[in-house]
Amino acid sequence: MNRLFEAEVFVRVVEDGSLTAAARRLGMTTSYVSKLVTRLEERLGARLAIRTTRKLTLTDTGRSYYERCTEAIRGLEEAERMATEEQQAPRGTLRLTVPNAFGSLFAMGVLAEFKARFPELTLELVFLDRQVDLIGEGFDVALRIGELGDPRLIARRLASTDRIVMASPSYLERAGTPREPEDLAGHECLLYAHHAAPGRWKVQGPRGVVEVDVAGHLVANHGSMLVEAARQGLGIIFVPVLLAAAELHAGRLRRVLPPWHWPMGVFAVYPPTPRVPAKTRVLVDFLVERMRVPPWAGLTA
Image 1 (cartoon, rainbow, N blue to C red):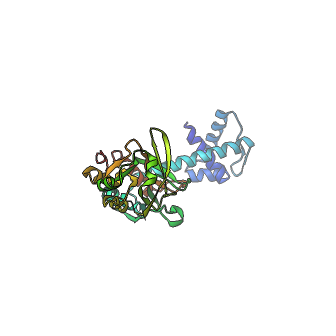
Image 2: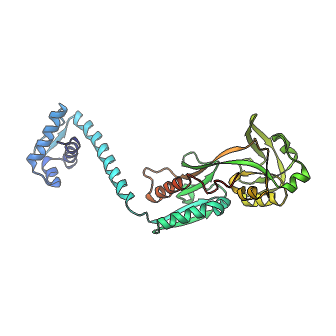
Image 3: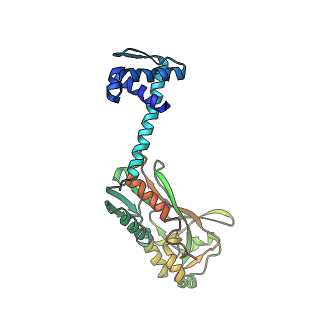
């Protein structure tokens, strides 16, 4: 006899309070249910309950066994529910927040593919560079580059990139080219408003990690605007290379301090829940699959 089946019958007997009630719910005879419980006790070598056809009283061993079996059966039921859900197309509305520049440059193409695969799902996209409160503001998923924010969130790495220092040829001709990270303190630096410390740039290179205090007369909350400002010769930027891939490739921006950079990850983050909703799971799994070779691959040479 299958051990799980014996355990499930025992749990039903305990929950229904008697052999007769359990037999009725299970569609079995009372004598057969009694036989299964007896066989279970013989196999375990322990008395689990004092029972009659109308009443059942658990022993201490029986109570402990019942509690453990209940946990196991609930786990099996949960696994079966999840397996069933995976065969069903997710429905409803999924709220996703995406950084502005990253969204317009790369994410929309990937999300369009996702939407075509799951047409019954409504995708509500909110483009924001600030880190939203996913739980408080009612978002299902956020795409983030670098800093993850709330440590309670679950994060899946999608890809890697680097934050690098860049400037236009015209700016470098006019102001000179920094040779070491410390030289940035004497240059016009274009700052990203949503950094935790916009005026402090941290780079990693031949001398390890170096932090430099920088300043400038332009601060923006949009990565693409900083790239455009740098292209116009207004100063030096320190942004994820993926945001400036086209400008670098075309020569409109040049990398400054080539040995120095700051490694970053691109992540999908979502709130912790006892069971990840199907709509969240399929989106994150799709992004992981689709970004194994990220859209900006080959553009940042």
